[in-house]
Amino acid sequence: MKFQVTKSVLDSVCTKFGRLLSSTVTIPILEGVLVEVKESHIDFIVSNGDESMLERVNLSEDVCVEVIGRAVFPRTLFSMTRKLKTGVIDFSLSISSSQITVKQKKTQLDFQAMSAEDFPNIMTNQKPINTFQLPYSVFKSFIEDTVYAVATSDTRPILQGVKLEFTPSSNGDCIFSSVATDSHRLAQCKTKNYETNENTVVMVPAGASLVQAVKSFNGNTEIGVFCYKNQIAFVSGNKKTIMYCRLLEGTYPATSKLIPQTTSFFTLQTTELVGVVELIKTIKKDTVCKLEYKSGSITISSNVPGGISKVQQELTVFDCQTEDKFTFSCSAEYLLESLKTISTEKVMLKVVEPLRPFLVSNVYEDVNNYDEQIQLILPIRSY
Image (cartoon, rainbow, N blue to C red; front, top):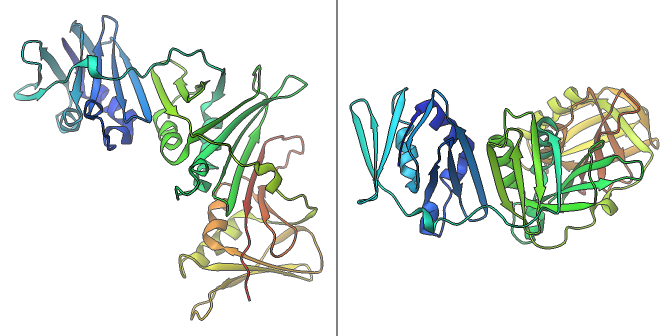
């Protein structure tokens, strides 16, 4: 096996792989990267057992193949080649000694290769249950606006994932939604007009797999989603990048039942509310913020028992529909993370009772806009 690639091409592959190149594995062969050199392209494959990624580079002026072959390169090889200078890097494999030689000008690096036959096959022979095409911008925003709400504790592993659901409607439209919750808060996004043939619910590990997918597919205009029984595959529009992720086992809770139905709300200025909540959060990480409505005005303040610091500010109210007096408290950190997902100039807080969950949502100027973004937060009892 012998080929040449420029450092920029190799750096791009390493960037796509991201944390998969440094993740801890228990199977020795997965400590390497499978490199398959073919006549028309070179495939680089990395896996940690739960997630696998294939990155394909086609022949070009930056990629040249002399002798085809396949072998598993140690991950340290890629770490060291990133330290080389800009230019062409030459790779050659000695079949007799299984030694990889990397050359660039006066520099030579030697590594021991592993057998490609021992590397697991990441491709599946299953027929996908369903397939979808999504604009990358939609995929990215839906993941970023929900993944922060997944559980960090493994007490309920299913809550460490994000539920992705495609639901066909009677008029031919398809509703795509993503939901995440850690049982103290919930994040949900919905949009429509995507074609599908059947209803599919998919669970994926969120903090690791989905964040990695968003980074790896950056720069693509479209992303394909292939749903299988035990895994999900994300495919770039040019088919050069494929990421496989195992699905979480179990039944996701019926989160739709948690969202309260209410007609009481406050409409506030998003940037103003974000600014004061950020100020409150600097007092202490677990600071509680209190919102008090009285006679048409809303005041937000910090609530730190025994604290020597306090923040208080009256907020601009655009619209309001609730009883004469209303007070509720919540975590400043949770409220701030929810507000950072709001993309509109105004934000709506929908309330029921002081000790029942409240909703944070966008306020769209276009009344026909179907896109829905809801953040639910459990209030905190305050005195």
